[in-house]
Length: 105
Image (cartoon, rainbow, N blue to C red):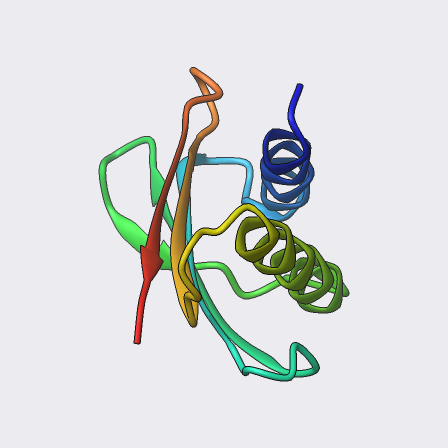
């Protein structure tokens, strides 16, 4: 498993831990500042009825996710990938499928 795949798995595990019981899909929208020391997050989920709701109980997930996103961005840039300022990360709880879309300047 490559380093970026390991980071994706860690992010997915954190998101899996904060999704409510009736959640099928969790969506994280994030923006990370250039210095990697601050980030904003928005967490939504889709329940069994197909309704989208906010995740309100996130505990310490934001701090862990910020560190993982900073690590991911640094790794990707070391691999000659372009700088990105945020991402949309989606995890399907039933299938384990991960999708990620990076937001560039």
